[in-house]
Image (cartoon, rainbow, N blue to C red):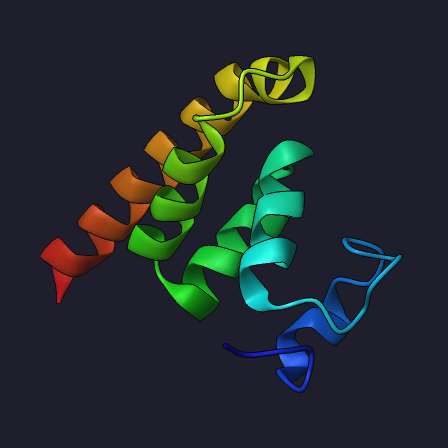
Amino acid sequence: MTTTANPFWKKHPGLVWSNADADDSIHIRAALVKPRFSQLLAIAVEFGVARLRAEWNELQTDESDEIQRARIPVERILANIEKGFALADARD
């Protein structure tokens, strides 16, 4: 597992402020719980849409209010990112 030795997370401080050495999954899940399009797009570019979707699917097993609040915006954001990646792939 990768830790914050990955310089990518230095561009996104505060995601896991209590443990800057948390692994990538923890950072990605923190971003999904408080979704911002630009941040999730950057994560998709760095780690792949499949990884982002897999982490979101893992979070879906949690029925907390926090996950419920994030569900609609995350689904919309992920759908738009996936469409954008598909269009980019089609142009190559």
